[in-house]
Image 1: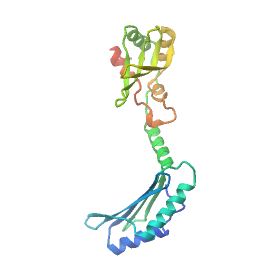
Image 2 (image 1 turned 180 degrees about the vertical axis):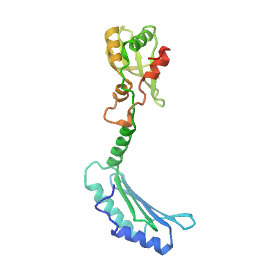
Image 3 (image 1 turned 90 degrees about the vertical axis):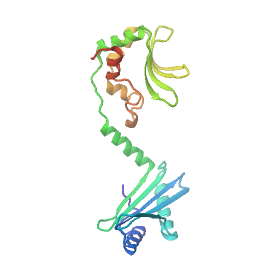
Image 4 (image 1 turned 180 degrees about the horizontal axis):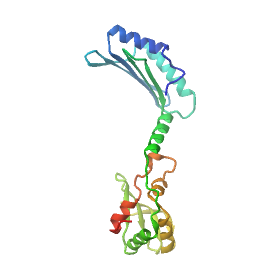
Length: 230
């Protein structure tokens, strides 16, 4: 996003363009950030020579103060914006490219991109597949897919000792956390028959498309485990 705080006529943009011309550069780029609740500022200048060689520097005192003030104003404009990042690119033969972003906007952009790229099969698994999965559980199988290998956490289907059916998390230490329990075989089959890759992919994090499909069951998994396509 660009910001009303910055235009091609802003002091910092005019300074960058003048610096590029004075040095005979093909491009000059400013990359700046404001982190830790607006208390830590960092900036880097990247100079591109006509032969493509890159050199690096930092802003002089006056332009740096201008950039810091601009970024702090943006940080204070709304609660919860998080870290602020500024990029200004001035090429020899193109208008300046200005991008001022905050953590909240970057998170939202990432979610929207993930949502646009998400494609999951929405066909219900059906009773036949659900019955075959129940048969595996009845035979003592624990069906699981890894959620976090570092923490040893898996998403699992299993039969607890009380004869019910469970869906939830299993831990490498042997503990389990059931998120759903089914009192009977038929209840479990009815539930799984109505699921799909799409529904299971989104169950744990319905509002965060970046997490969809991570450590979740799908039709291909059940087909491998049951040995039959569906």
